[in-house]
Image 1 (tube, rainbow, N blue to C red):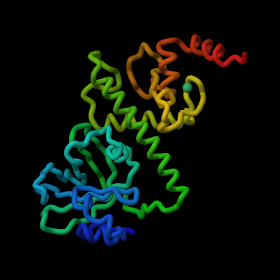
Image 2 (cartoon, helix red, strand yellow; image 1 turned 135 degrees about the vertical axis):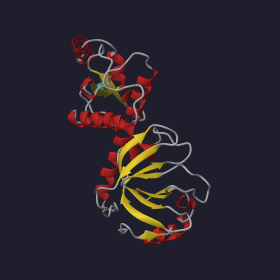
Image 3 (spheres, rainbow, N blue to C red; image 1 turned 180 degrees about the horizontal axis):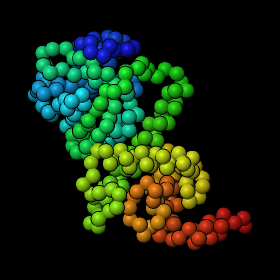
Length: 266
Ligand SMILES: [Zn+2]
């Protein structure tokens, strides 16, 4: 399945070209966006009210599209996280007149995300669209793993932002009134850190599971220098929540000492 950039399609055309089973047609397909086959299909009115009367002032700014997600959305929701991280392909169909079919603009690259409700994205379409159907089981399992990592990291980044916002003292690096690009920056920093640590807890050096049932095993950002309040990427390492809570504000020498005691064979 490849849609042609610049060609026009109705919602029905899109569902037909995707071979959407009859039972799965309609529903969310008739709204602003629908997730299907691990991809997102966006249908938007730009500079005009849609049939439901909503007008979120989606607009073209040069060759970039400013687009609003559905009412009530927020940055912490799984789909919004995936979109923020670019971990779900987003196909954009738009029109300026709600009586006309949609023009396919291609795959959107998220270049700015505003943490507001509804969530606001700024998209560019620099990359040519590619067929992104994931039917290879290896690719699918990698995609699932990437989703879990992306969701975990975006959740952590959102929590860090909340913490910074609540804090009255000025922060170095990340500011209380931070918006999209800085959020993406934080997410990217945490992701780089995860790969640098090979997915191991930096306090106990055992693997950090993604989406564990036990909360103590979940990923947690620990400031390397606790006195430095900044959550700048170079001051954060990733740990198990349990390890982070246990270490608290102790220094590394005391922590190593503690580990050697609890790991000692009887
Ligand atoms: Zn640990």
